[in-house]
Length: 170
Image 1 (cartoon, rainbow, N blue to C red):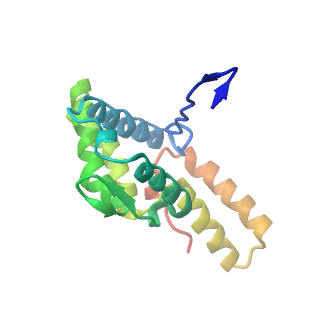
Image 2: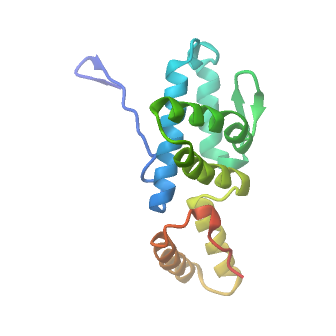
């Protein structure tokens, strides 16, 4: 954006608000800051390996398709988000956290949450969509299904169990 004839960049970081539990937020932060450290210290920066157009296309594909999309990554070509996380980004995050001096058991705990999410395909939004769908299939009208999903979400949020471990509705 340009304001008062001066360009500026606004970067939004949604690591913490993505939750939904404290352990999920800690995992998100560990994943983000670990990956960031590794990428920042790489001898050849990512932007020299990947065009702006490819990054922009990845952004749009992620917004449209979420975990069902296909993303370009240098050296891998097109991959699914879960494959990118499991094969490339988790090892980067682990290395970055190691460089920060984070103990192996702490890295394993929080990055294990990210791994579980990638393997199950379940994050907060996926859980919400599946829960509303299941409640509607059980006969609840959409407004009541949304209210019941929110009630369950709030209850489960306080369990501090990672969202990928939350049980499906029967």
